[in-house]
Length: 128
Image 1 (cartoon, rainbow, N blue to C red):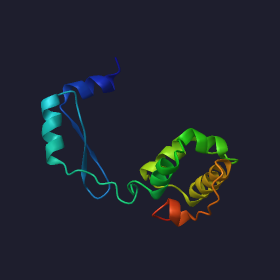
Image 2: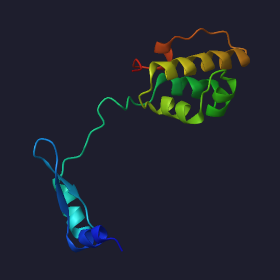
Image 3: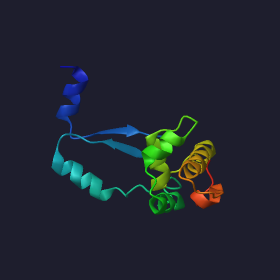
């Protein structure tokens, strides 16, 4: 057993100085202490990363297009993970949005639907 591990097990928690003098708590194995410390800490918000369900999701549901069909119709390197993030509203880069836009237009052509889409038809935010 490493001496550092023994030290952590003997103390309920350690305090590390962080920039600005704020203490960061490293939780121990004591569940009662962990629960008390978690109740006193404010919850962190995801600022600017989640944008909610996107118009892309509603469009794909209406047209009966699944993630796999969109990935297969893409000529770029598009993954299921990126399509899933796009539908959920997790913030993507502008490049990833363009890949999804191109794949969506190609998927519509494969289904025989003549429709032009813009990025604003698929996403309600501009990628970073």
